[in-house]
Image (cartoon, rainbow, N blue to C red; front, side, top):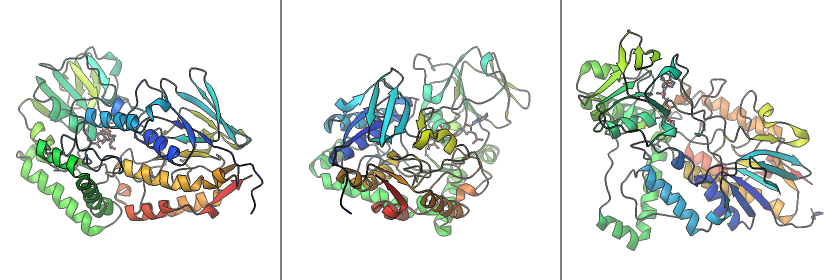
Length: 487
Ligand code: NAP
């Protein structure tokens, strides 16, 4: 069909300057789309900027937890620490001249659609009209504090793990940690040598797969610099390992699951010596139902003489510590809430109004309605990276984001050609997509009965229930029959 619209250069607002936002800038520029990145904070880096707790690292190997097109010979370790990862993202933003496109301290508070355009507004009152809104807002950035009686009574230092207070000294002090997620399991080994005592309050035990961290030698780094292809190979090797093991196990591959289970059980049996402690650390749900912990330092740390695991439950928080359900008071100087995040809010509290003023909050009132994790019917030219049902689990979100942007570049082509003014998924395609996902969710380990942040408010996993290969295929090209092209 001949185009009736004048070809026009497109403008996008990218929201968030974390891993996905920086990547989106690189990819939209490649596609010839002008953009501004709006960042609520004073610095880029997203989750790696916000989480500064001791021991922070990524449990995906660094030579895979990086952009596929930007290998980094300088990684210090197989699982490099958080500050190195933050520096990497900031460096990529500089190298690709994305940093100058970021408006810092500009939180987008609303995006309103009308006449084929989006009007966005920031908390500081800046407004811009754009063709495309691309939310790169992440999903683990709304810290959840536990609803435990007496939380406001504690007289020591207390903070959420994602709001770490560096001014608080830990040396020689009694530190309590509530939670046993990926965060808490990294904090305990990192502080056990410094603190006088570390008390971990466990509500639910975790499966732990030992994955040794090793430092790269100067010779290895020199070799990476001299032979960049060796990093590309390493990237592919780790990808293959993840996609053929954990990623298969969690979506129903019985053989891979039995291998994973054996690895976790063996780790527990060989590396936790006291049978009473071992029993306390033994989960009562399937491996992978909660996000698998990768660590060979947590078990040694929790067995240190100055570490204690409290499993009797928390009765209340008191001015001087935590009272457990057996009546014992655990006196503390510092209390850390490693109690996780609301992983389902995505770009909210931002107000998003689509066609005829329809609120995204209303569209998402029951569950996060999305087509292919990236768009929402009734919200034309509004896209998300690593949105609801994106493959997450123990997989690198960077590759997920790259594949989604590859899809998006193709999806935006009709807009760029001037064939349409806007594009939105049809309700039919969205419903078909979600019903296929929900139909498959029962085969996954996340639906086997444990509680985790993977579950949405209906109790259903908001996860990708198929293999990584299926996701890669789905993202290889858009099917335009799933979309309305709006003229
Ligand atoms: P999380 O996995 O949601 O863990 C929260 C912990 O707090 C759980 O152990 C939970 O217990 C406990 N908790 C919550 N409310 C409680 C209450 N009222 N009383 C007692 N315990 C309570 O949070 P997270 O550890 O911050 O990790 C979140 C996600 O961040 C991870 O799953 C992962 O995706 C990401 N992350 C990744 C890495 C990495 O290395 N790649 C590192 C850190 C975080 P229950 O289990 O009983 O609910």
